Length: 142
Image (cartoon, rainbow, N blue to C red; front, side, top):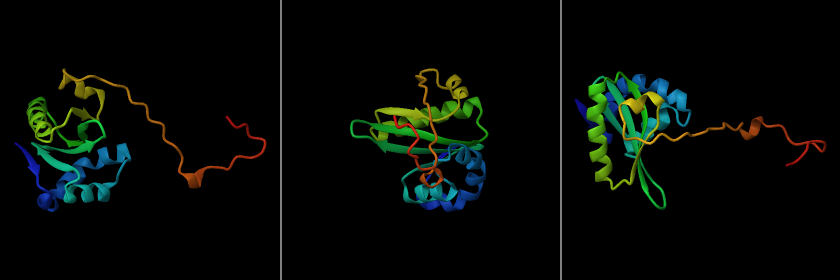
């Protein structure tokens, strides 16, 4: 069973979804559990129950295209569940007039999405401004 959880229903399933998504939330570091909950209850992100797993989607409106993004996964996903979710995701993205579906995840997802193009994304974590040391006169400036 795949079910889109409406914003008003998120509170009813949040404990189960939160625990399943916790590792993924921590890994990305883009938001914490509270941030995600706020996005879900306001409709700025969507929560999906996918059999024994959970997924989070978002529509990202760029100036020249709309991207349907599958940004978080948690719980158990088998081949059947992923194939069914793929069909649901395509229909959902089409409904929102998305030009592209972007899946943020490990390389292992490619075996479920053979039509996907793999792009390499490099991420450089910058230190928080309060943790940087000021340049001294002797430090070279590029």
